Length: 77
Ligand code: HEM
Image (cartoon, rainbow, N blue to C red; front, side, top):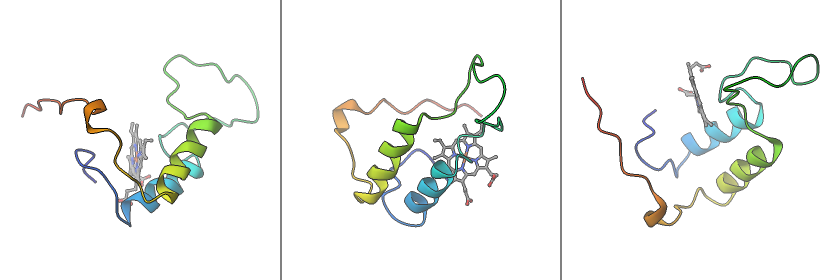
């Protein structure tokens, strides 16, 4: 799955929603209901972020303002 382009269409937008909603992505295998929760570099999403992501997919995964888009990284081989 390339992340260099916008994933407007199924299956990617729906897969992203499913993985994010179930907290499978981004990977963070900590039990959110028990034990220490504060870790440096914790990449997991907040409930609000997950809600926003799901709403974005439900809205048809629209493109945002292109002016806000960062330039593509230069990848080296
Ligand atoms: C919000 C951010 C992320 C989203 C929306 C996302 C979404 C997805 C999706 C939709 C798949 C399934 C692809 C398929 O069906 O072929 C997937 C698989 C995978 N992702 Fe992510 N991902 C995210 C972040 C990450 C990060 C940060 C990592 C690594 C550090 C990662 C590692 C993987 C791996 C290893 C797989 C394949 C293994 C598996 O299916 O469990 N992802 N991801």
